[in-house]
Image (cartoon, rainbow, N blue to C red):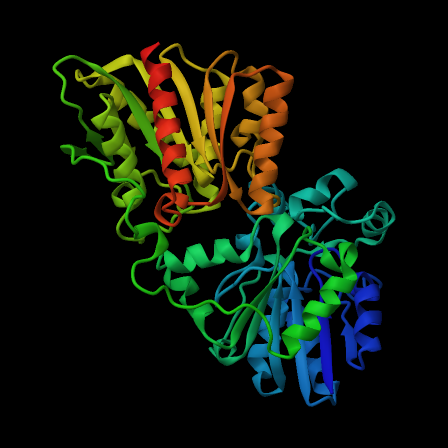
Amino acid sequence: MTAFILVSGTFTGGWVWEEVTARLEESGAEVYPVTLTGMGDRRDPAGPGTDLETHIEDLVRLIDEVEAPEVVIVGHCYGIHPVLGAADRRPERIARIVHLDAGMPRDGDPALELVPDRAVRDRLLQAEQAEGDWSIAPPSLDEWQRWGSTVGIPAPALERLVRLAAPQPLGTLTQPLRLSGAVPGLPMTGVLCTANGAGIAMVESLVGLGDPRFQALIDPRVSFFELGTGHWPMLSTPDELAGVLLRAAAGEGHRLTAPSGQPAHLRPFLMEVPERSRERVGRVDLYLPDAGRPRPAVVFVHGGPVPADVLPTPRDWPTYVGYGRYVASLGAVGVTLDHRLHDLTDYERAAEDVAEAVEFVRADPRVDGERVALWYFSGGGLLSADWLAAPPPWLRCVAATYPILAPLPNWGLSDRFRPAAAVRTAGRLPIVLTRVGLESAGIAATVEEFLTAAKECEAEVEVIDIPFAHHGFETTDHTEQARHAVDRAVRAVLGHLRN
């Protein structure tokens, strides 16, 4: 018999698992929905000394009491921290760890560091420093979205979530997780809630980048599932979640494999483009046309976050080299750059890098500084918001290819990085948007939000659709349709620069 130990995220208790528990018990499994010390109906035992270690000990005691030979322990959101701590101390009892829309904390990581919302982190740090303040109040109804997407939660369940939420002891979020090294040897399943931003394709791309933190995910003992819902699947899709947990316990799920040959982002560009001379100055590369007079420029802004130690860096990836060469072959200066978007907390720094690169390019005597286009890709799309909000007169066009145009749920970015709002003040600035049909649901939703706002304010947007293309199609989808879309987008941008 399998026993499931279910551990939910911040502010909640075992009650959030009621429907999932019922489904699992109907299958014949033992189920232990956990309410950790200080949470749910266990508020009284909490105090200034309640910390992550307290919650780990809660789970260790429970594991010792469970008699079932196989224990599958599920950690949702914050819950993965005490789950990993307890599994590290009782590895012989754990058949599988399930990361339910949860991160991958390592030894020494406090849960607070993995909260992407800067405003939430600052609030927690201020509370920690306040004398006598040892817990943080749960979010209001409007604030829950900061802790993860509430998409799919029925209104009564969301109301109950707010009503029953308990203050979170600060020590549970600030105390570092300590692991001995036993956890990596245990089977693991990741359940990704795609409406909260992440999906299997995104994880595969991170593995393909060569980031060492993600190489363990290609282990055959690691599997993945997707749920098309927000961050609280136990409330939004309990039947589907129960089914996924049973399949995970049986060892099912999608397996990642090591990239064969070149990683997807390093495969050849989809078009044959002429070689062009390239000049490299600092973080900026210039692809120069054959011309004696100043020419307009297209600045290509790569996506991310891209880990700092990934080599080659994005400006040497075939996609950006290909675009830079192509626009140079058509008479404009192609510009690529490496900006420092290495983490979700780096958007402000990356925005500064882009602004500095643009000023550098405009000052080059070979560039007509009054005719510049900015072209954004993927997660770099959020960096377009500053320029859309207040377009300078020299900015003749903004382009975006498979972009993210609003922060994904729980990314925790300010409204400064929300192009879907900034477009309302873009005026008549031309926008060229390349949209792929095989996009993830979370990213596609941000594009629709942008287009809805653009339509309402009558912004000048040209949409180029590629129905059967993927995110990053330039090196994965070498089809005539994709090549035509790239050519159309490039010529549209250059047309705006020449008008």
